[in-house]
Image 1 (cartoon, rainbow, N blue to C red):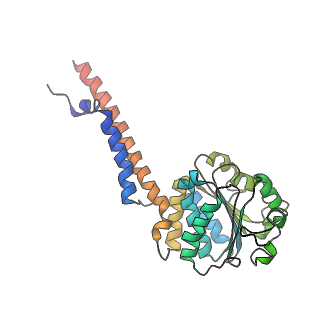
Image 2: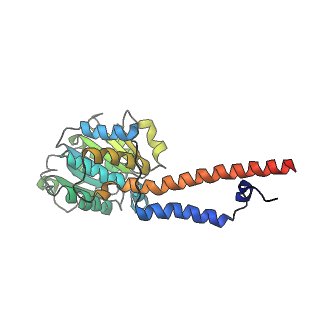
Image 3: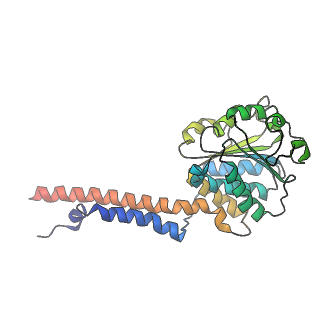
Length: 291
């Protein structure tokens, strides 16, 4: 008497399972499959917080991560910069991480200048770059930015950069964004950036899944918006693209959704395998009992 299919599935060579899992990741990556995303409250809160900032405001965007975390954080950085530029905000870029500068440069080239070519350095955007000091940098910026950054990234004194000439401290910004992979990052901005003027600006962050637990206690009081890992980036992209569709290269504001494709397919496959494994085990026990 032949064995039922479910019983035979329980003895399948595990190499077939490894192959199926590999294909579930590789194929969606190659095809750049994008599934619809339903934005959740945190992603909507982030979008709405940025929307409430008056058009043309001066904002600070801190790229507090390095290439090891760009898979999670670069998609949200791209979408945030496009969102801010679509609102006409004047952006000041900086980083608390030594390798965050090139990532900011990439976003400036691929998103800001590609989608919004009218942006001029020194007038519509500027770069402060990196300085060591971790949370010490944030503390000093809360009271005296020119002391912490005597020049911009290009070596020009702040007084000679129109966008930065009257910038005294962090209260000179209407919005502060930290795209954060850990220490120093969003937590340090929450704790030290406001200085003597609490709630002087709107603060939102994007973070890796690993750091999320450290930041959740600050949401939504001190932190009005928070994007959690690739899932949060994909949800936020959906909202931004709906209201501010990119004029070209739409895939650059869809990378989070592209990265969610392999995750979704692989998780569905994993659930199917778990269900089949349990059914196979139950069928084997039933067949053994009948004997």
